[in-house]
Image 1 (cartoon, rainbow, N blue to C red):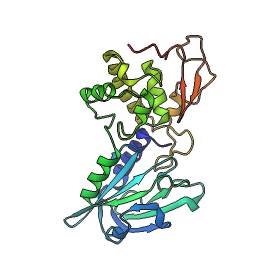
Image 2: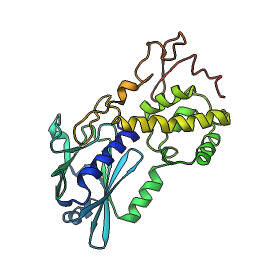
Image 3: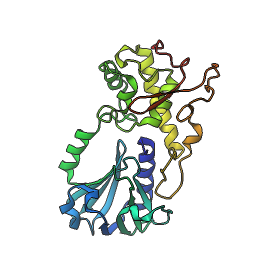
Length: 279
């Protein structure tokens, strides 16, 4: 479930609490939880956490030791969480990695992932660069207006799958795709290349507005998401359509929110998001 806003909340809390701290130990409970680079695990103890970055729905921890820099990339996947030791953990048997620190505000960071759709990957800088190029498209918070317009006009497929295609736009999942498209008044299955320039501009603006608002609210704790300090994201209280099939349209158009089942459920208003609306 964690998407870009949740990953950004995680990255910000890690920066606040652990930058400059030394990693004293790293425990891995399941060998298969490390997707790449497991042989480099012995290098990490003694390294200093120098930076925390977000790539799409993933969080990358940059460690430095002497002149060498290495990275731990945590994919949050469907149920992955990075949690401080004070956060309450349901089913603690699903804590698969523990990183112990000294000199920071928090003594421990745990990787909890019951369904294990996400993994950890360990890279040097070259490996990280290759991983980012391979896995992630434009970041919707930093993509330029021109790049966004070009991306939309260059796709002959359906709009919602394009927004959720991580190699095209990195970080948007089902929750925020539904919310963005409702606010933009666009049907999830409209062909992307048939949108007018004003519609693309509206989509560009509202994509950033929704994601930034969600970050400010701590993300959306719909099912399993908790920030590292154990707090829940409150943006779920501002969802207009996600999970609200059968409820009246928030725009008071007289219709109810419909649910369209394809790869992922789409929640939309048949009136406010008519497929004829491309302007």
